[in-house]
Length: 163
Image (spheres, rainbow, N blue to C red):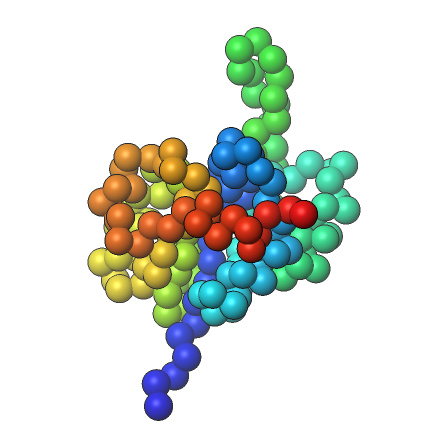
């Protein structure tokens, strides 16, 4: 009998959240975590997110939904003259996927960001890439090389959308 593979998910929360909203609906993160466990047998789902103190309650509920939270301090940026809070988590996601590398058999990257090209390439080369779940069909062209791994959240929207 073949042992069950240990599958970990590495989630770029902002890319996922904003990408889904761009498709016109809202993700229920608790339902999404259950879906990942049921469909892909995800044992640990790392959720990378910028930390803003006023959202402590949200972070607690995400932790209770089964996510392992990885926080990044945020900074105020400038975009078209308006101050916006930024918590770019790309480096943290790549770093933690490598820290955990020996602990999982397969990894799922959840983001449509081309900055994860090198991670997808390495995981593919080491036979550890299970899926790349993109938030919508507007993902980076750099990820097209991994088309056989790509699944859009829109394909299972009814199972994970906020009711």
